[in-house]
Image (cartoon, rainbow, N blue to C red; front, side, top):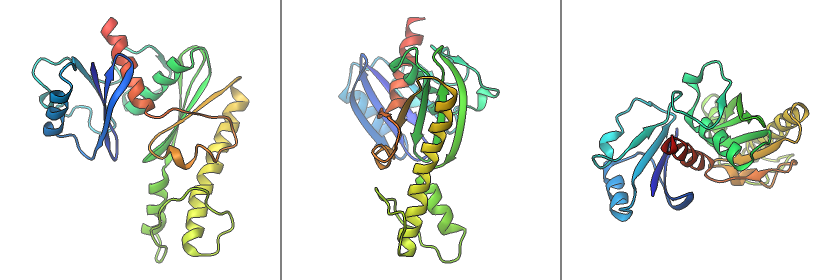
Length: 242
């Protein structure tokens, strides 16, 4: 068994893999030695750990785990089963990197656009030859709602909804319409541009806010939950063999 940890902007996600299958997953606001110790007590066959963090990659993670457990802290120098075509690989988010590794593994020989909807919405392209070509980052749902509330005098802080109306008749629903329908239009538009550049484009949607969009987009999209964790498992296995 192997433990994969994705330290995100909002939550940390932990998954226990038995070979290539997730058999346990949990989310935490902050990693703690207590919860990790409980996890190792519950799954005593865990033999190694891989961590990807969008925060400080130099944080000392080793003391959180039992002594002698092999640990991979994913960074731009970690050997990967893909090639990186990115001007500043040292600044590339490890969540984005893990996601495209998973996409290439799940859809080999395909041009793939990975869209992750979480704190931010990221768009990342890996081509059919396994070259990560880069992508883009835009504000996620909560960031957009908070920005409208924090940088205006009277607009309330509202919650996201599925199937927001287009022509709203209250301030609250107008904000929901602008944010939710705006994101859908953004995603559809970016997919259309990539589709015009890359033949037979495979589009993958993942992230914590996946459920808000997977049924509201025009294009045929593959929903792949936990794509970052799956990518970490693939990277771990690649390094374990080398």
